[in-house]
Figure: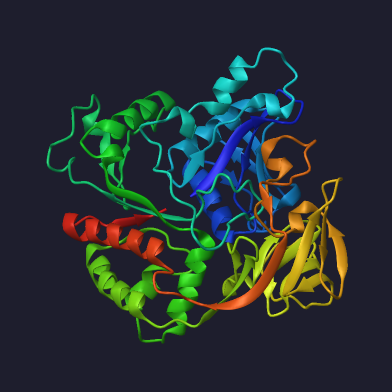
Length: 440
């Protein structure tokens, strides 16, 4: 699921759209572009969509730009064509892969004393104003503290799945004024179709009907978060290590970035494989933990080459060197690749951290001492001022570990219980209902 906000530019009345997700994720970029294209947005040819910096787009209501900003976040900007922001906002709200977050416009130094109109535009359809559609809060995963260049207090990123109920087919839904316009798409979702297209008024009315038209909220038998992206990558790596011929269905449906639907038949096969995976012996896992609290801070994700977070200055992660901070060596292309180790600022398997009065952090062990921005420190949750609009803050979050150790730990029974239980729930609902499971 992808998080976004509609908010004013800093000290401006012009609205823009900002995405909280890591813009170096090629799946995210392509999902965003495909969603926009489905609404009639034309994308210029000859551009690299994954590593874009400024990209001109043309919509049915006029042009806007898709830009990669600092911290490699993505923005949609239309300073002289604000109706394009409203148009894109409506498009994203119709796609349940995107979640709109609430915004306080005063944090962006809004230049007008009257903020009521801006607050209404920025928060219309956000999760705080849609209680019927609000997804259940998840407990934080016990493993990787997931803060890829974002405010990790909004820990909702990752792979989700849902299974639709059969109430529409069984005639158990309450009446809808435009029932003749209800269609079912290739992913088994109900949508409103007309020859002349959809209007925002129709869509708002239809979304309200979907929310409580039957005994199942939003017509979902089950609708849950499966795993954070890093935890999913670890499970994928464990599946790969267990043999080429084992778990064929799980490997196929939990591919690099699961999308689309899974048939009830595949769910039945996967459910059996899931039980075998839960009993399998797994190898050791490289982790970083807080020595004082014993809390696990990070896990080594093979597909990310151990990288935990990136900024224009640093590449931070854990590997055989321990916790490492590298100068970010690649300009213009934001991707994961093995570290060459030739621009390492700091690396250690056991070190201490001290927050300095100016907000920076000192990392030191028996061999070396460095002072870095708070972003590069190891801790449970670090917020970024770019994401809160409070540029005067240092970016230090709730906890920076005083002493950190990087070591190998044996995977204990139950390590993946949270993710496996979620998969069991959606597989069983699909099998019982005969409806496909849908990833998003």
